[in-house]
Image (cartoon, helix red, strand yellow):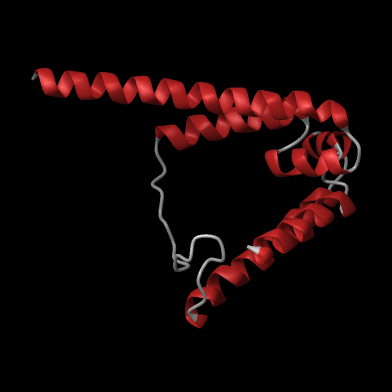
Length: 144
């Protein structure tokens, strides 16, 4: 668990240091007027890619769950396309993504609580809709 805390600490510090926790910087990136965020994202993707390539070979297990590091393939389907579009719309409207929203609290942006509340409400709504959908599918299958 301490390793997870340290990882979160480094992640939050990096977001704040790179100004990714500031909605106006993110919105400038989305409006193609500031490409600094692109370099931050590329650096993070590079480190993550290397870690995901090396960790399985070292036999290291995930610190929180103890599971092995392995690829989990998710097919590109309608839910991925629609969910990604909705996520992008929320990102563009708020100027912040979920990880950066929490880091934004750390730099004193208290108004970001509205966005965090919206994220929780949206996730809850999606979960409730998915549960109802699964329940109706189960009921339809058992009737047949």
